[in-house]
Amino acid sequence: MKLSFFVRDLPLKHTFTIAHQSRDVQDTIIVKLEDNGLFGLGETTTNPFYGMKAENIMEHLEASRNLVEKSQWQNPEELWEMGKEIFQNNPFAQCALDMAAWDIFSKKKGKKLYEYLGLNPKDIPLTNFTIGIDSIEKMVEKMKEVDWPLYKIKLGTNHDLEIIKALRKHTTATFRIDANCAWTAEQAIRYSEALAKLNVEFMEQPLGKDDLEGMKEVFRYSKLPVIADESCIVEADVKKCHDLFHGINVKLVKAGGITPGLRMIHEAKTLGMKTMVGCMTESSVGITAIAHIAPLLDYVDMDGAMLLAKDIAKGVEITPERVTFPEGNGIGAVLLD
Image 1 (cartoon, rainbow, N blue to C red):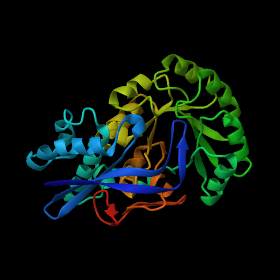
Image 2 (image 1 turned 120 degrees about the horizontal axis):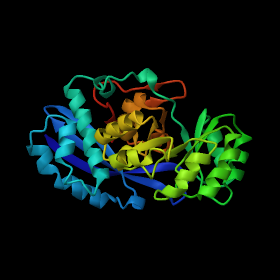
Image 3 (image 1 turned 180 degrees about the horizontal axis):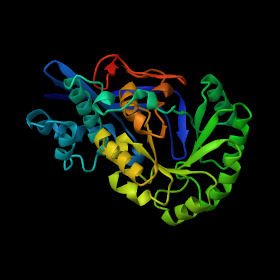
Image 4 (image 1 turned 90 degrees about the vertical axis):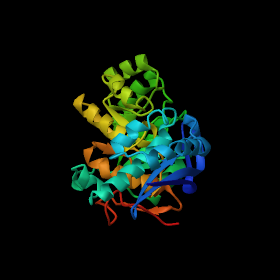
């Protein structure tokens, strides 16, 4: 088994702004595993909010080289467990390796990943298309640029309701809103009543991740379901979110990959919670991986590659009508460079 990894730039179509950051280019790290003529690809994007930079991600991947190349791991779950100590402070790096391991492993099994997992691609829910924070005029332009039946609207300004009311005038599409920790409990409860009348499906992470007392109030009084994002990073967080949120949004990059992501989804289902997987503006490598596990989900946010001015890979193709997987086994994404 040979391990390699490298950095690529992902230029965005538009400046992408959420409550705590803006960016025009997203750095991403691609991991490649090669063995007996087969290869597997994995991906993780960088994120300064979580302290995850290209340098420390690659340092952790390099630290795993002996484990990956010389140990006799049999499947991705085993490799993930063996690498826990190496990656304990860098789940982003572990995600990229885990994803590549699932890709090459399912190729060796002669199956697409969703086939190996026993999933039916016809069960994939429609992804939302994300509209980042901008002037109302620019946000309307972005919606008109991509006519989509389901939008996620990023909020966290001092005029959030005004934004949704203005956007509603231009589309009948369903909205989801994501405040990225920007609101107080009082705001979230008050806004939920108005948002429910504006065809908003749910609110994602309205409060700061540690405001548990506030979330108890929001969970009790909100007119809309609330979905955890920043409050649900790793497996131990799922149980903590029960009775505070109606569902969880698992980010594979933050959780450490497909292996823990699957466990988080199944635990949430056992607790009667809704499940969602979101993206971190990955290329078609990471987005295609998400699509393979999407049949498990109630909601999915896998529009990352659709936000790029230039993709570095070819993979899953997504339209409002269908999700089309690439040819070949495994995850199936291939690099264009």
